Image: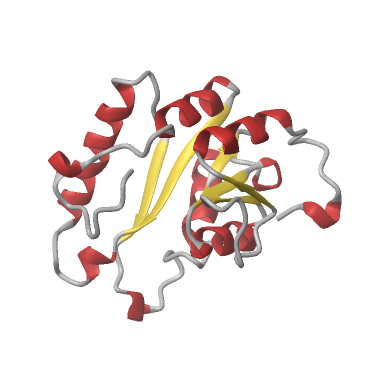
Length: 177
């Protein structure tokens, strides 16, 4: 979703180019898709949790019109100064998603466009992909991609079940069978 800064109005939801295609590729590849998001606008009093739910519903609708979707969304409503365990870069919401949906984090990838996404994924034990237009960054991710389609193609081309121990590091996660 295009970052509009404290998005709390469903009519402002816009998909990033390639997002639907990337999510569709991952879903078709058998991945369980979880969105993890910080929503400090709630903690700051800018909007309520019902607004987060409305934006999430609109995101579902936008993706479905393009043949894609996600399976779950977890959000942190806290102010950054609250020092909660669920706000990225802490891994709390990824760990909660794994627990609630029986996801194997060692067979999972966290894909994000912020250093906090990568840090949360690494702390949770997933492999990480940073989406960056430059293809790399000062953020230490396991892999880099220019967009979600490229990230999805990488994930689908990798062997998610045979990872060397020293290489294991969103919350795009594969269900344990």
